[in-house]
Structure formats: structure tokens, C-alpha cells
Amino acid sequence: MTNELLVDIDSVQVSVKLSRTRRLQIVDYASMQIRRGEMMGLIGESGSGKTMLCRGFIGTLERRDAYISGGKILFDGIDLAKAKSETWRAIRGKRIGYVPQSALAGPNPVLTIEAQLLETLKNDPKLDRQAARKRAMELLDIVQIRRPDIVMKQYPNQLSGGMKQRVMIACAIALQPELIVADEPTTGLDVTVQAEIMKLLKDIRSEFNTSIVLVSHDLPLINDVCDRITVMHAGATIETLPSSEIENSKHPYTIALYKSRIDLAPPRGELITIKGQPPAVGGWQEGCRFNQRCDFVTDACLVGPHPKYIQLSQDHQTACINHASISDKVGSR
Amino acid sequence: MTPRLEGKNISVTFGDIFRKVEAVKNVDVSLEPGQTIGIVGESGSGKSTLARVLAGIQVPTSGQVTYEGANIWQGKTSYPGQMRRKVQMVFQDPYGSLNPRMRAVHAVAEAVTFHQKVVGNDAKKIAFDLLDRMGITQKDALKLPRALSGGQRQRVSVARALSANPEVLIADEPTSAIDQSAQSQLLSLFSELIADGLSIILVSHDLGVIRYLTDRVYVMESGNFVEAGDTAQIFSNPQMEYTQKLISSIPGHITKSR
Picture 1 (spheres, each protein chain N blue to C red):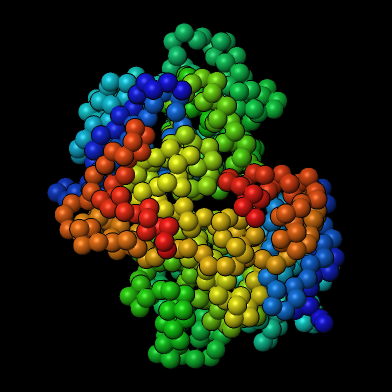
Picture 2 (picture 1 turned 45 degrees about the vertical axis):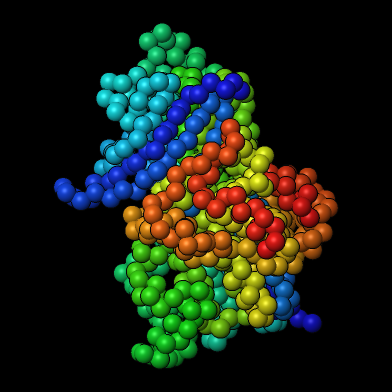
């Protein structure tokens, strides 16, 4: 992993069109830097905006009637927030690969696996049909599908959930992208299959030096496989930190998320829960959006806009204005 | 002591004579009063089918299920008469298991009316109380399911099941479709219910949840139990390769923190 920056997301806002005149901002402050060859975990509750942020950097927001309403997403120097469709055509699938959330509905049910892979591979002008077919076999081999010659001729309904997800990963890496966005790739799959898919992503990363953004709401999983973690809450990124430093988190939400890990609790002992529900999308109160659920809330948290990132060290940014005093209070609790 | 719920030699076979799938093969399972058991395994290992047999939804191909010594099947009906109230089930998908046109409190009041023969405002009052116990406020109780989060919907489902005052609650993957923070809220609720004397049969592939909640665990692989025993023992010293594989696939280090 080098320190070269691949993606620089700076104060990005995403809005949805509700009607001709009404707009709802669903992400209002997202900042994140991804280096080449880095595995970045993006974590947050349902509705925190993590999927919409991802759609922002694969350029499929319009399909949900949404658009980037502010900030910039620099991908290798190109501003994706303002990109035209020609720019997107050169990037999407070729330089940025996408593994969708629902593995089971991912592949087209009426196309064979071969047809799907060839569809992606025909975007590569260097490959003729023969070479593309050979490359498709290679790809299935990379994602560790046994007997690729048989699987090529099969339809998605003949494959298990884990195999379908492998095929989707094969499609995503087909043109050797520099960035792979994997949106909850293992939701709905078994723990054993999940472990295999994670190992596969790690192998791909180390073999091709690909950057990977892994979206999940499973903190132990993210913490296990990623280099750095970005936490989202109510439409804003609230902390970015190296996964090895998760215990030194300076944001109460990250701390609560970490402490609510079930494997840290004694059997049937007290589970630490985050009280209340996440605030409704768009219906955000003044001040820090976590202030209703926070144990360390002060008067300063209740007023003003949602706090922006404060740089703590090179790899660690947090959006908690009380970050300096948080760690002492956690210890004494 | 007679076990509260017991399954003997249960087999379930799907398909016809040409293509048979044995989902569950001759397994014995027993639940003592006040105990909580877990059934773990991968997709397709037969754990949900077994849970459905114990709940009386699925007819076993062979074997029998007894509740406090009495056979639960009488002809084609399972859990005849008052027995039905004793064993209740909560399903995996919180989005699909509630009527989308019914407000949470009405969904629960319906179950209250059915089980407790109370109608109208009295049923609604009991429903509000039940939902309150599940941590759902009066305001949220008047919402439609689509306005509730996954965790809240799952708690409404639990409230519906508890309206029958059951002694056994069978939960089929109750946490797999909801967020981590909602999961810990639901699990805290379950451990309170266990403390109040409810027995829970928990079906899950999430070993963290199993470790937290259960006394005994059955590990299932392709229709058989490969290992069964005290939860603490299985986690600290798994005997079978399959169990070891399951435990080592957990993100984080559960075994280390024990």
C-alpha cells in the first residue's frame, strides 16, 4: 500500500428529488480519502446514507432520482460529482467496479454466466471473442469457482448464493479496476461463506493492488478485514480511523458501536445498547445529530450545524467537538 | 423430569420418489424447563425445517414431538386446543411478517383477541402494555409497519408471539435482517424474557448470538447433529472439524475473548 491518494471525497452532499420542487438532503457531509491498495470500511446504521454515498461514486444516483448537490468526489483527479455521461462511460466498470448488495438478485437470471462475463469484457477493445472467453474462464478461476467450464454454461438459479456473489465479484474485477465498491457483499450469506468472500477480496487487493470500499453494518467484520474505517451516522461521516485504533476512538457513536459488540458481552450479561433510534432521514435536529443518543452530551452539542471533521492525526479524523475529554469519561464509566 | 419440548427421531424428507431431499435425518432434541437452546448451522443444513417441526408448522416424515409428555400431533392438527398457546414462533423477516396495512398496536391487538378472548379497547390496552414492554412507545405503536425500523418491527412480532403467554418461543434467525444496535436491543429483551422464565429455541447462523443467549447448543450439518452440548463447552473446546470451521469464520475473535 502506497500513500498515493486514489479517491478524495470532500464535503459531499446528496439530495433526492421528491417532486418537481421538493428536495430532501439525505447525505449532507461526507468526507473520506481512499489510498491506492487500501481497504476502507464504511459502516453505519440503515438509513445513514452509506449506500447513497457509494452510488455517488459509481454514478448511478439518477436511477434513484438523486444527485450530488455539493462537494466534490475526486477520483484520480477527475471530479465525479460533475462528470458527464461520456466520462462515466470511461470509468464505470472499467476503473471502478461495483459488487451489489443482493447477491441473490445480482446476476441477470436469463443470461448464462458466460454471457454476463462477456457482456462486461466486450468493453475491452483489446479482446476478441476468443480471448474474452479465455479471460472469462481465468476470472472464474481467480474468484475460486471450481470447474469454471461447467459454471460458464449455467444460469444463476443453478448456483448457490456464495457462488453468485463470486460471479458478481468476477464481473467487478473483469477489467482490472483501480477501485472496487462492495456494498454489503455478504448480507444474507452464511458466516463460513462470508469468511471465504472476505478472504477473496483480500487476495484480490494484494494481488492487483486494488482499493476496496467495503460497506457493511457489521463492525467486527469491518474491523477484521479493513485497514481503515469510516463511520457514518445520519447522513454524515463522523469518524475515520485505522482499524487497529478502534479502541482509541474519539467519537461516542463509534465507541458505543464498538462496545455493543456481542462477542464482548458475558453470556446473558448486560448488553450495551445505543439508546433510541437513529434520527429520521432529513429530519435532523440542530447541533450534533447524535446528541439525543449520546452519553457525553454537553450544551455545545445542542446548537449550531453538525460538526465537521477535526484532524487528530494523519489517519484519524473525528467529528466530535468534545473528543479531547471523551476518552477519560469512557474509562470512568 | 419430563422435558418441556422434546423431539425424537425426527426426519423430514422433501420431494418425490425420484428426487428426495432429506432435510432432517433422525435427530433427537430436548428442551428442559427454563432452558434456552440454540440450533446452528449453515444455510441448507436443516435448522429452519427442524424449528418448523418443533413449532408444529411442518409435518415430520417420521418421529414424534412431545410437549410435556403429550404428543403435539392429533391427526392433522398440531398443538390442539390450549397447547397451541404454549409454543409460539417469531420469523426471520421482519419486513414480510407484519400486515402492511395494520398499525403495530392493531396487529398485536388482533393476536391478543385471538389468544386471550379479549376484544375492543381492552385488547388494545393489553397490546399497548405488551408493546411498551418491548420498548415501543405509544407513539410508535400507532405507526404502520413501513414507518418502523427493522428492529422495531421484529419487536412487534415478538409482542404478537408473547400475547399468547407462551412457555416456549421459537425464534428463527430473529436478528439476521437487522442492524447491530437493533440486534443488541432485541437480545437484551430476549435475556429479560429468559429471566422471567420463558424458554427460547434460537435458530441462527450467528454464533455470537448463540453464545450470548443459550445454555445448550446443537450444531447441525446436512440434516444431522454433528455436535451438541453446553454452549460454554462447545465454544471453548469444539470437538468436530465442522464446529471449529464455523467458530473460526466469525469476524473478530470470539474464542479469544472468552
